[in-house]
Amino acid sequence: MSSFGQLFKITTFGESHCDSVGVIVENMIPKVQLDLVYIQKQLNRRRPGQSHITTSRAEPDTLELLSGMERGMTLGTPLAFRVENRDTRPGDYKFDENEYLPRPSHADMTYIWKYGIHSASGGGRSSARETVGRVIGGSIADQILGNCNCRVVAFVSQVGNIRLNVSRKDMLALTRDFIDTFVTRCPNGAADKRIESLILKLKKKGDSVGGKVTCIVTAPPKGLGEPVFNKTEALLAHAMLSIPATKGFEIGSGFGCIQQTGSEHNDPWITDNSGNIRTLTNNSGGTLGGITNGEPIIFSVAFKPPATIKMDQNTVNLKGEYRRIKAKGRHDPCVVARAVPIVEAMASLVLVDLIYQHRSRLTL
Picture 1 (cartoon, rainbow, N blue to C red):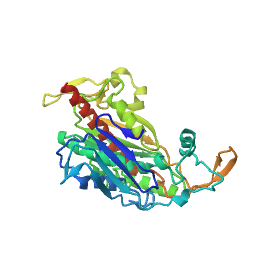
Picture 2: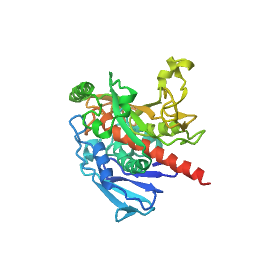
Picture 3: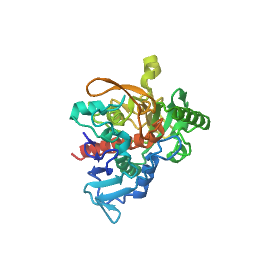
Picture 4: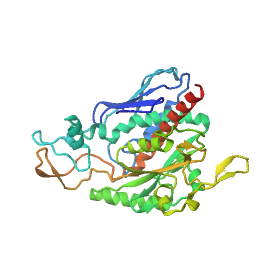
């Protein structure tokens, strides 16, 4: 499936080294002054070649509107956008025409098993280049969320063994602009420098490293989520694990809850100084029974080390005969810095789709 969402729905298209990639956004609210400059800003945060710790592929990722707006205002019809692929090098991925060598930990072999064919240039649809469309759709969702004062911010919280310890209070104060002042998008000067050094060391060796992105949703509307199978956390997990290179998802206390007792983990209900009913600890991460309770939604996503490394590796050809392979092309030694706006985009898409569903329920 190349579509995500039930009511607020996106469909992405394009491959990593084809003419262009893009997205179709369905069921956009009509008569909205959509800020295309904001969308371009988010694309710039995701694009390759933005720093010395990312891939050297130099894509400008210039947004092009195809349909759905007139005089800066949405028409309510499908929005369509495309972004040209300008710095393509499909030749970096061509094998001997008589022998196809699937790359270790890539989707080359599984795509062949599923479709009987796979893009000869790069990862095709399995490439993170596809996420351009997600960021465009998520940037539109951001603007809808802004109308209800809901804010989505993500940051790098771990790379390799380097972890960022940040209090909940400090986490809630983070902004995208502040996080972007750090080259690794880890919002701590000391941790940022250590992560940068690690990534550059591995990049020089031709190796890679994994990491973790943490996301905070502040002031989410209460009552979002469609139990039992479309719980808020279930849809967030679906969205995050659909991002290329993801290997884990946790919300609230996550896997740490295993070491706690019920008396330690429970979220007591309290009344704050303004008379609002809240929870004391938010160990649940902003949802109870799959429904948002108004507390900040806090979750993390684990990303594996990029599979393309410039080192000799073992593989087999399609006959099962052993071969040696050394990857070409331009790739990130660590993906998490560029994954930050993608995580934000997918979270925003989930929330807006749930808002649409919740409002349709109230109007029945």
